[in-house]
Image 1: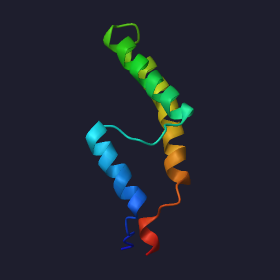
Image 2: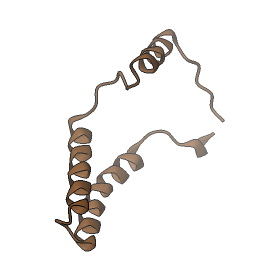
Image 3: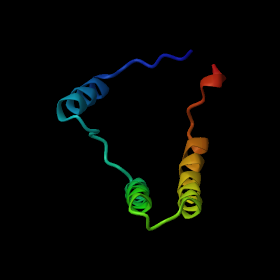
Image 4: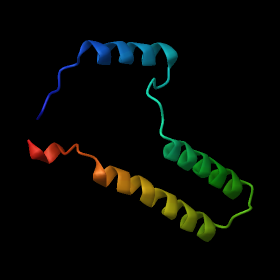
Length: 80
């Protein structure tokens, strides 16, 4: 298992995040758009504007974008 040491900047960032109770790193526009779309999708389904099939189809399309991002990450716990 690879253990990465925390440097001073990381420690400071983590302390700020704990105090602010949110991430201090800027979010990518694409992620903000996906989160907004997911929230709107949930609200539409709860209000009865979408049936379960429409909900599943739309959420599947959005989730593939997240899967692609996870597949492209450089972190691999099996490489140790």
